[in-house]
Amino acid sequence: MSDEEEIILSELNDEDLVLQMHDDLYDGMKEEIEEAVNILLERGWQPYDVLTKALVEGMRIVGIDFRDGILFVPEVLLAAGAMKGGMAILKPLLAETGAPRLGAMVIGTVKGDIHDIGKNLVTMMMEGAGFEVKDLGINNPVENYIEALETGEFDILGMSALLTTTMPYMKVVIDTMVEKGMRDDFTVLVGGAPLNEEFGKAIGADAYCRDAAVAVETAKEFMAKKHNQMAAG
Amino acid sequence: MAQLSDIELSETGLDAPSDPAGRVLILACGALAREILALIKLNDWGHMDLTCLPAKLHLYPEKITDAVADAVEKHRANYEQIFVAYADCGTGGMLASKCKELGVDMIAGPHCYSFFEGNDAFGKLEDEITAFYLTDFLVKQFDAFVWKPMGLDRHPELRDMYFGNYTKLVYQAQVNDPTLDRKAELIAQKMGLPLERRFTGYGDLSVALADVSRR
Figure (cartoon, rainbow over the protein chains, first blue to last red):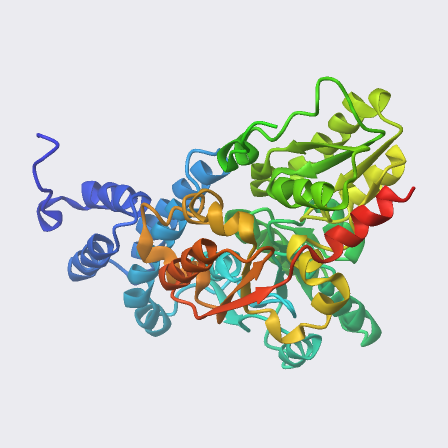
């Protein structure tokens, strides 16, 4: 096949189509991803299988190449935009078909900070992995986080900051949780470009997550621990 | 002195004089070279020399502290005093700790937008968290420091993902230059943000260097 020849997605068998979707996600081709998602659904695929085998697996490959310095932020954003297109089709169907639910997370960028690219990536990847996510948006004072946590709907709190001047605010939130006697009821994950593991420990978070893929894996580990503790208890 | 090149100040910095003339070395970010040289000339601070690290270090703030420390060690035998013309610059306090350890002073404040405005005044600008700032240097080097590293030259469709939460572009002018004003207007159009031009002059940079000059 010549490189120039156009690939007709609907003519590919399932296996080749999924591989093509991984390539298209990698290249940030939103329209192609949307088309392929619809093709798989028309062929009788379960929405959950389309999500995990095509989209999440594709983004996992993107995540690895980002971690290894092969892809950079702009390419990851394009891939995320393509995945978002696919997710928009699948989301209502996933709710109808009762996809597995691993846990629930509330996430937001801290007060004084309006940067949300990392947070949005985490939100999307967490949703793709089977977490229910409430996104509080940007510039959140401590009250917003506490109010959400007090609903009892969430297992995990995620906080994001891009600035060295705003990241200390994460400690304000965690200290307030301690004061209210609710800190141990939640897993607290933090992330953002200027943070590191040492900072995460120093402010009393459960974990610092270097990127969205790590956030998903860390959230899964903490949920599994929680599940085991409850089973043992 | 040979003509300064913004590209060289970004990529390679500025070497210290091979034959040190002054007692004091200002070790600065390349983005501040023109402003510091202007202040030295204006105030006739003949006892001050200048060397700059590449301004592009700001794209990797985690590398700034080690680069400054290496430069202090390299030059300290030649000078009675070294002053680090960096603010915290995204190092999360690491640069301040290192400077303390090395026994050298640095500029107070979080970044150059703050000290050009004046740290006290900048601290009171609470309604400006949605402002994107540019200095004279960054207006001149906008493509190299912002547009290209963010991939916007290749993928302009990502613009709103990056800047969608910003509500204005603030151009902090160190000097009055209609060419830069025009360039700032074009940048604002490119970013899709309204422009606010504020003349700051050299702000706390001149205060800090005047203090060093008196020691």
